[in-house]
Length: 143
Image 1 (cartoon, rainbow, N blue to C red):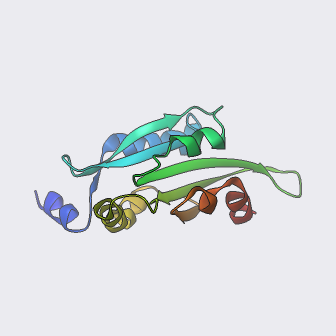
Image 2: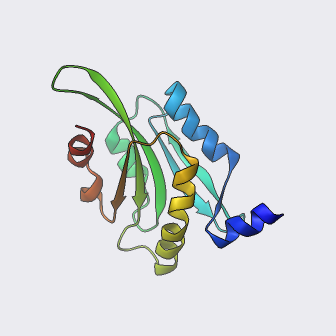
């Protein structure tokens, strides 16, 4: 009971399946990305969509809603200048300029609590439009 009250005061709780989806992406590479949304009725962050390992970055970007906020995890594979295959996990706080003020505030106040539950993220990006999180941005951050 005390946990519920304390989590409510500092943002949303995190559903177990949200943590599990992250671990599946991180450890088993069964997802290319995971998109999370806040379920206001349940007061927790839940999985909205997962992307198969073969899906592209464009598939991921297209899966984000145009007018609503989301959290997302993207597993970015790349090759270094030394020709080494690498992978970095990005946490993306998607908050488009066209989304409702209430949604922006809800996602902003819950982000840190949710992010802390996901151990192993390399980089964080806050984006208000697609150009702030395109492939060049990820590549620059990862290198």
